[in-house]
Image 1: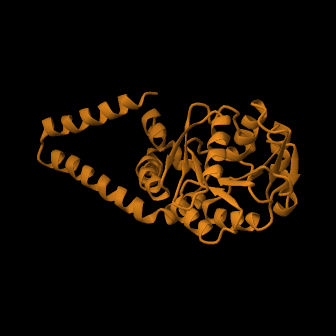
Image 2: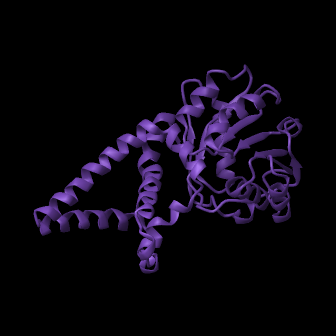
Image 3: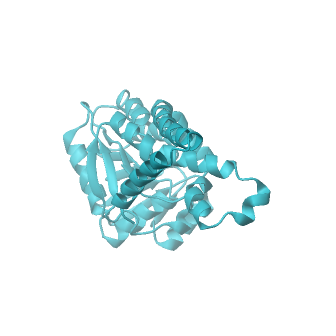
Length: 278
């Protein structure tokens, strides 16, 4: 493919650009954003070749356009691009939620436009192109979504795109994705933020490695995560209810001094964590 256009060249968008360059997937990579200085940093790092402050200027002859903007903006940006780019240009995204985005796009997608929702399961609490990493997606899973309205050639191109960046790829229904990520990503962020939020300032000097490791992701951008919670509210509430039941088991064990019961809970958690690996 000849031209890749990345809309939102931060950590994820910059990493896509670096990976695509290192693997020589495209001849030209365009970066689109609202902050010229951020785009300049991305170009200086080698993630993009061209800078565009207007999406329409970057669409001509693009083979793939990937949207790495906050989830609240993605659907409208894709629909705007779909009305202006050439037929069979692949439009995809890196949003952490899929149901709301995919429904909004598919309901209004013009004929001939190709859209496939995606979510690379990689990232960091850091932001900005200076933190981009060409190996961010290597051997990491990317979810590519399929619905009854998904164009199969578009799906195949999306699979090839993410595999080309080094990802392992799995295909899921958008709603299934959201239920899964509520437990594996969105709930952990909520819990890390809750734990960080209850730390009294006088105790900060005593917060050592365990506390810092457990709350690391709470340093993520609050506005970005508020939008994710909003998009995946129902699934996150279900995940939170599941967690509350498990927390109640710990509380009952402590209140009743059921130390064998507490040990069983801790042992089961250790088994799951050990199975995940490093």
